[in-house]
Length: 381
Image 1 (cartoon, rainbow, N blue to C red):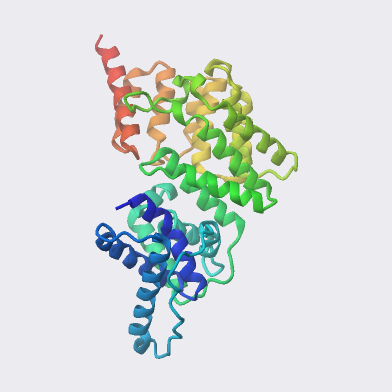
Image 2 (tube, rainbow, N blue to C red; image 1 turned 90 degrees about the horizontal axis):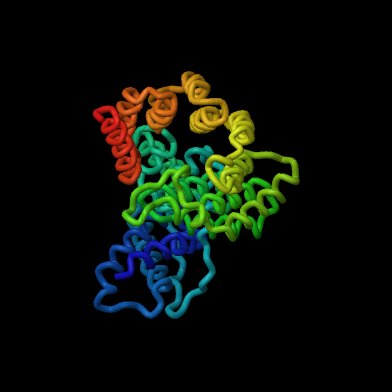
């Protein structure tokens, strides 16, 4: 059973059902039922056309559910003919489905959450972490979004900004989380950039390319996380960096700055530095000032505190950190880094241990635990 193939085909099959008249929630349920059927049937009798098989079975599941629901809804369900057997079209509907999920009846936040869960493949826990809210709160938000669009025919696409937010969060989960979705997010953003003359689409593509260029250097041979300052810059993908910088420069030339362009500019400054000592931290702080102005994001303010600590010294960084909520994810890790640079090893060790306990991934937890152990060893020695 090829689970990767099933996961790849899922958005396309949902898109086919939506275009045939199914509302999104019903299409998602029908496709999930078809996937269960595929897990049962394919090992003994694999289909020659997996996509066509899933479309046909999911459409039958949808029709069965619609018929069963007819009496409760007190209306007749119009039944369309099943897809004919044989090879089906091979167009990729994933990006179109992202737009359809960003439905005008939903708030942008709800549309993003629903799309990440139903199409992006993220868990409710992963989405909650991205939004900095409890998992139960996010589960309720997604449930409300599903109820809102229940029975809606998805004929009116959402806006580009909502789709960009989804792609950004999918990429971030693929880049730093447990599920590898980064390459798919880049592929879809490239496709969107080819279709749309929008400077923030270009900004997001540049940001993805510049971050993805460092991917090979982010972990060591043993799988351990390697911080940016310690990465082997010879392992960075210079081709992706050059492309990302070129895409960013063309976007910035339009003089309509947005948050993704600002983030890409910060990433470009890191990529441009031959060594960590040659990083232009003053310019990075200036770009974080722009990013904070555009978003007022607590995460942007947290990262700005790190940059201020590098540009103006750790005490300046700690002063910038003082205005933020200590409950903010990675706050303790940033505070630990700045305290260590300021020579307060006892507090830094305690903060590294605190940060490890709330780390969002095993790799980050392991890294922070080792940082705490390193400082404790120095204090004992």
